[in-house]
Length: 295
Image (tube, rainbow, N blue to C red; front, side):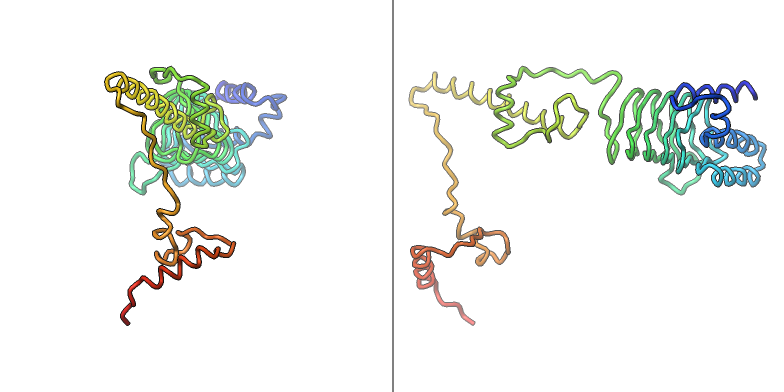
């Protein structure tokens, strides 16, 4: 028992640079207190002394602000930093060398009996305020970002952020074919569509920005292919011309988008300037040519 206690205290020194000495860790770290009380409560739970185990768990929550169900299984060298607001459900399984920060929830999404809570592999780190909900596995060495909400299985070594949680990094990244994209051409396409990747560089772990960047690269490849097709057509047919697409004039849609005709406020163009004489004359002519309405 004392060897296990020393192991738990040493794990605090390994992961918290603020820890200064043995006595300070033993007396002032609520995460360690909650872990020690949970080990006693879990032993009572396995001996079928469930009421006593739950009572000890409630006392631990009152003392430390950390609620660990006595039925949860926790591995060695488990560390809760700060700890206030941590909740670990009954069927949760926590591996060795796992680190949780304050406000973490290992919860369930069902009221059915059986496995309802997540399984954390060895070496998992869960940031402050993260919620891991459901009976799935978070692979060994994975990292869950602060305030993330994870409801699906996480592969080993992955990093998950966001709501809902998205994988932004893998230990073994997927192999994909690199596009031969001219950086100047990519920037020109970005300027054409007014997209700056949210001000985030391609190296930043933003899945939305990476998806948009991939779309722009695809559009670049499509433009290149269309240019080659047009070049080939010019070689095959001397009469072939690179025709310009017809321009969309606002006048062609004025009658359709006018809010008085559609009855949809905000659809048509609005202008704070009074209409010109030519516009008023055109409106009067249009009213004269319209047939009278019955009723």
